[in-house]
Length: 349
Image (cartoon, rainbow, N blue to C red; front, top):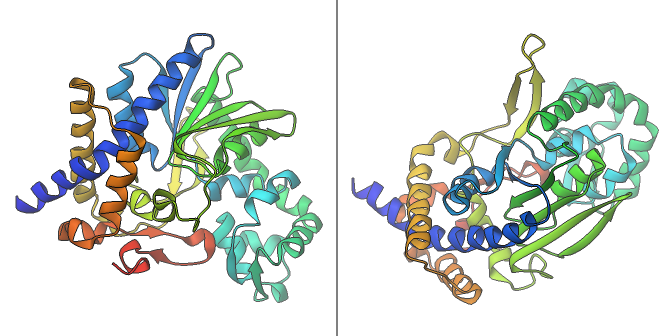
């Protein structure tokens, strides 16, 4: 009982104001957009699991919305044969073997990798972004082989995107996420050849980004023009947010379609402690959503400066984080070839 009370109060006091401020501002921006176009909101997995619930409280059914099963890793894989995608999928830092790179960055299976890589190359050590050109040469040389592996899954995923309305020509899609560079939004724009907008908590660069013949419009709520390690605490220590804003399942890695009824089956990657003990995190999230409800009911508004101060206070003082929450601060970092990350240890709290 005391544990649940502690978790719920922490969610209310820490996560609640942050989410409430974000979705309230998102709702304001969407109302302006919806006044002259048909908007539909897509909550990107996995942070979208909580955002969808918070948005429903604020939006009250005025703008259509949907949870979207998506991940950078999955989009990296199904666009792996498209040269324009490589600047997004390959440049991110990685240290390990070439075989492990393709398995962790793109979620290829060992069997997949062996279809387009010689066995002698699998154990070659690489380091990114230094070896960016080398990896691109490998992708270029094996483009046709890779396409054979990726195209069936890409077609199924396009069917899924069509089923949730993302491909509808009459709809202006807006994606919601924590941030930061809008990689998923850019890849969806590239994949669908469709203009897509995004509203994030924090962005490295807001504005209009040209993706081929289309545009990814990136907007922010708290801060823009910031880079990791640049001193902006909400970005530098965003691992604390990402740990708590997650879904009951692991990272989305694959999709299957039932030929009999056109339904979809989603496949997820490894689970962390958080997913294995989701009832504790659900209690934290429940507290946060109660705060969102109270903020709407009583018209409570926080300034960006107040949210920044609140966040920095919590993530720099371990004694403000209830002991019951400590195991929840963990997230997987397979995309960089690392295991799980624990922000408490990482930042020496």
